[in-house]
Length: 364
Image (tube, rainbow, N blue to C red; front, side, top):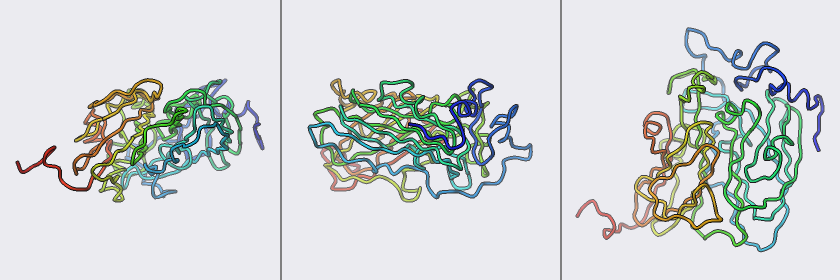
């Protein structure tokens, strides 16, 4: 059921660029482009440099990596009523650098959804008044047109509903899939849906949820001011930033004191979703190894063991386990290391506890 207070599907598709020239960017904070004017045109900067940084709508767009629904402990399927709301917000990529994000629920990546194989989801998709653009959601865990994208395509002020059954297990991405989807995903519109197998997942002490994406702007990395989407650099697949959870070095002690914490002897499972839209991640834990790896998020096959680095293509969620035998600071990175050193792609896990010189010592 779709509620259309002011528009119909034809106006939604027109706003999305279907039936006319496709939008070539997805900037916010401006009125919708008129005929003959694209969103990219409304975001042009002058030869004098970047506009001043905008006032932010939120202090932090990075999703809390431990904000994950509890593991499922039941043997029968059930129904879930889930609401996913689009929020277009201005926030800082790093201090002094603002950017207009497109998000699910005001965070990057969007909220993790956790269900069991065989569960039914009643989804309400909201695109509130005040947003500038049409949006939708494509779930890779859904059999159906566009993974639900057709059913959820909405203009600002509209709400859509759909229903699906999670028939196959695994960890999957969801993302916006309007015609200019590369812009929307780059700006933060992606997340992960976890469909647990009927027998559940191995118990761990911690679960961590991270999302990588590449962001293309008119400014240089670290240049203060307001950064608008840059289609030219997107076409060349040359991002200004490569981020985990929407901010430069978001999950580190130097950024809001927000490193992840664990203790020796514990275990963790990481759900890592690569929104892209373009770059494959070489996901690696510096000082550790993926003790069990579920390639491409598959829980239907036996996990691989003791893997140093795993490729995670755009449009993929990977699940991987870590053990913590010694105290250390583990760096979770894309091993295309310029993205770490220059463009912001890093999260850390601080592991405390007793030393274990039989495994490692710096005083032999």
